[in-house]
Image (tube, each protein chain N blue to C red):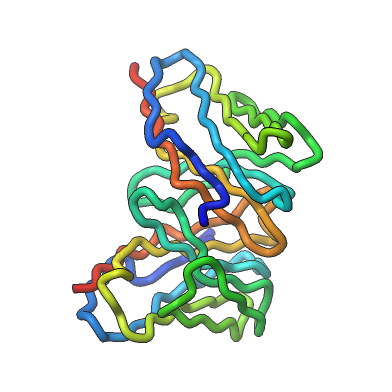
Length: 114
Length: 110
C-alpha cells in the first residue's frame, strides 16, 4: 500500500536551476494537489488537479508549472529556482474533494535553493 | 490573504486533560472543515471533518465543533495522550481546493 510517493526526499538547487518534483499515487484518486509548507505560514496551495488533463492554480502558483497526463502522476516543475522557493513541498490526493476522508499526503520533499 | 487562521502557535497540556485547539476562517463559502495531525518528517494525516450544516462531529477522543456565526471551529481531544503531541492543522474546503491554517503545536506532558 504505497499511497502517495514523492521523490526526491531532499534536494539542493542553485539559483536559476530547474527541476521536477515527482508525485505518484496508486489509489486511483481524481484529485491531486501540491502544497508548500513554510514556518508560520502553514500549508499553501500551489496547483491542483481535479482529473487527468485538468489543472488549476492555487494561492502561490508563480514560478511553478504542473501537468496531469495520467491519473497517477502529478509532477511539479520549478522553472528557475529562487531562494524564496526554499520550502517543504507536499503532494496530496483524494478520491473526491477530500471532504469526508481528507487528503492523503506524501511524506514531503525538502528543497533548499542556494 | 489567509482565509484560515490558527492564532495559537503552541499549546501545552497535561496527560489526561482536555486539549482545545482553535481555528477561525473568513470565507463564508467554505462548506467543509477538517483537522489534520502532522508528526516531524511526515506528511499531514487526516483526523476528522465536519460539514457546514452540522455543529458537532465526534470520533473517539476527537470532537470538532463548528460555530458558523462566529466563523470559528475547535478540536477537542479528551483525554489527551503523549502520542497526541504533534502539529495540528485546520483546513477549510472551497469549490475545488483546500486552505490550511498555520498550525498549532500541541505538547502533551506525561
